Length: 246
Image 1: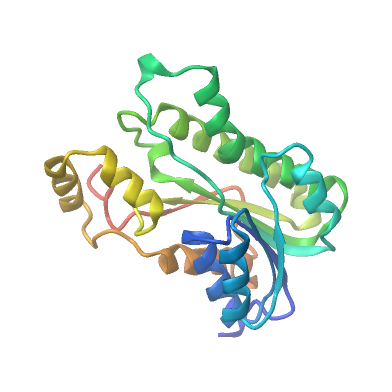
Image 2 (image 1 turned 120 degrees about the vertical axis):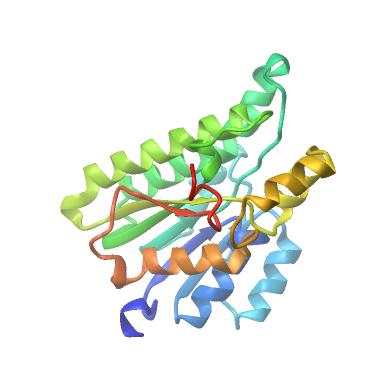
C-alpha cells in the first residue's frame, strides 16, 4: 500500500551487518528506500550490499574515537534512521564495575544518542523525518543479569520522548520499538546464559512464540513510512503476547 512505501526516502540503519538491522535493510529495500548501511563487519555489509543491489555502506565502529563524527560527515540529508546496533552482556549486579558499565552504555545508549544529536544539530534529518530506536521489552520487565542492559534501554526510551518533544515543530517523529526475544544472536546469547528448563518455561509464556527479525523490521517500516505521520514519542511493543497477562 502506498502509505507504507519508503520510495524516495533515504534511511540510515546502524548495526546493519546482522540480526534486526540486516532484516531492516532487506525489508526497506523491497519498500523502495534508498539506504545507508553501517556496521563493524565489512564482509557482512558487502554481502548485504550485493543482495539488495548496491546501496551505500559505511564501515564504522560507533564506539571508536571520532567514529560517529566520521559517519555523520559522510551522510547527506536523511528521511529516517533506525538505531539497531546493540549488545546485551548479562552480568550479576554484585559484579558490575566501571568497565562493564561503559561497555554496555557506549553502544546501547551513548552511540544512538550522540549520532542522533549530531545529525539533528547539523540539520541532516529532513522535515517530517522519522527516528526509530530499537529498545527491549526488558526495560519494563527486567531480568536477572540484565541490570545494565535494561537500564540503558529505559534511558534510551526517555531520550526518544524528549527528541519527539523538541522536534515536533519540524514534523520529526521519534519512537521506540520494544522487542522481546527474537531469533538473532541476542537470543543465542540469552539461551547460553539460561538453564534449559528456565528457557523452556519462559518460551511457554510467548503466546505466538519467539519473534523473527522481519517482525521487527515490519514495525520499523511502519514508523518510517507516512502511515505513521501521527505517531511520535511512543513505544511499540512487539512481544508475541508475552506481557498479555502482565
